[in-house]
Length: 289
Figure 1 (cartoon, rainbow, N blue to C red):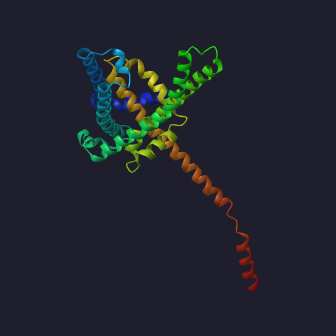
Figure 2 (cartoon, rainbow, N blue to C red):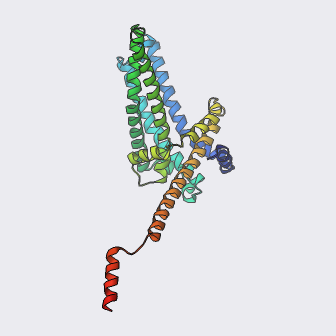
Figure 3 (tube, rainbow, N blue to C red):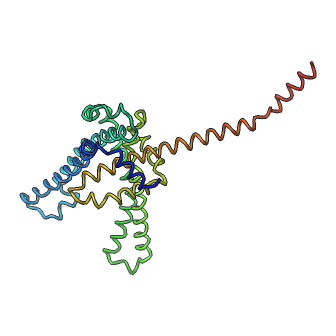
């Protein structure tokens, strides 16, 4: 898939709908940034009014810091995940040219019970799998840091090098898995009967060998997303382009499956010779006649 053609067709789809689509796509990002900033603001208040050092906020022994983190994370999941699902739902009507999807209001999509249930379930599954995939990188990273901090680098040189290498490899595998989960909200919308767990597995299979398209899109829109002025514009184009690419990926897989099925049927027709047992029956009937 050529990214330039994908971007060109995305701009064509957004023509005349850019402002309305931008308001929908910026809501999940806005909710994510809001709770991130709220967490940082509460931590700043703890430092200002409390008798503690800044380094204490990064430890796990501070109950106030832990409570703020847990509350912020839960609220972020409860708001950002349904907003992302509703936004992807509207984008599906745009990229797939589904009139029934575009006609339904954003608020009605957001307030459905299935929206909250499926989006939050998918968020829990993907984040749990991401944490499990990140565990090896944390283990090897802490091992390398401990050896370097204890000044055992000279004595355990090969152990430290291996630990650093395994940390880098584990981080790359974790990033690859996180990119594979990017299609989960889009698959939940396109397949309403698909469970969140199966959507996660399907996303990994669908994105296999196709993550470069998403990386190229991010690389193109990342400079714009780093500026607050162009952030809504870049997020809208990125989400729309990725929604369109998911449609193309699904159609490619369906086309390949159809070709495989047709090839199997064609082979069966060409090789549909009469079996030995059937030959015997026909020959016996001919002799009797």
